[in-house]
Length: 277
Ligand code: SNW
Image (tube, rainbow, N blue to C red; front, top):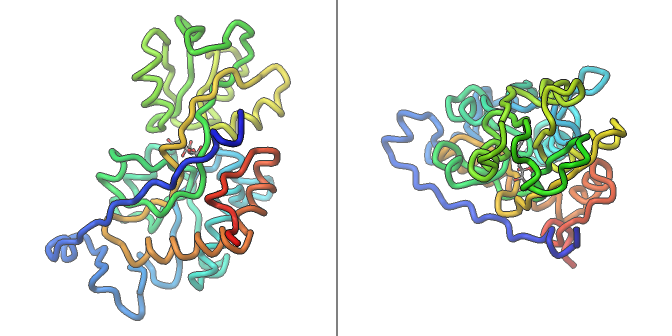
């Protein structure tokens, strides 16, 4: 994997024109932003975040029962720049497939879990600027699986609603896809041999391969055109723009770089997220 491959321009998030009627009915009223609730939060005193408990090292529950990981720490840093202390940010773990609908329905202010920015997802929610871009990776203990073609006739785990599920459905048509609600269930299935391989995000795959010596990453599919962003309710431009400003600051002052080195040691960092001189 070379450095150049890791570079990809941040996806431009199309400006969303909030209709007056939309404001009244959705409550995500950019134009009606008030001083007491500038970001149109469910509770103006805190940020409610939907995330995942088993997406290490992006977002997971650590041994002390606290949410941790690159995405969690980056979000806490950005939220602090908006004026919210750690205690004013509440994380709730959900299945991946529930995250985007939960933000759209107003259950959470934002979803944070390496959620890739794509056009279909942008139909129901808005995304902040991108903050992470990498590969979708197949992990396996089967020595015969080396390329995509070797997945023919194999049982491959995917988590419902992920880009991995979408990619595999479209491209691995001769593979038996086994759908899981979460990563924990898929990893158990992989370790007890119910599935031959599992398909998830590169850093998660890398950590599993380090943890279980029989496992290795066999295939990497570039997903740089779908950089991860923070997911907010459609039309909540005040919140989205404030998050973008916080993200830019975290990239410019080296916070992003420090967190990347901490959570993804050894992985190349694209220049676009690094401080500019
Ligand atoms: O598209 C990639 C992005 O380039 C980066 O590598 C981080 O992960 C992605 O956003 C893809 N993530 C999956 C998705 O968005 C699964 C997320 C998860 O399991 N938490 O569907």
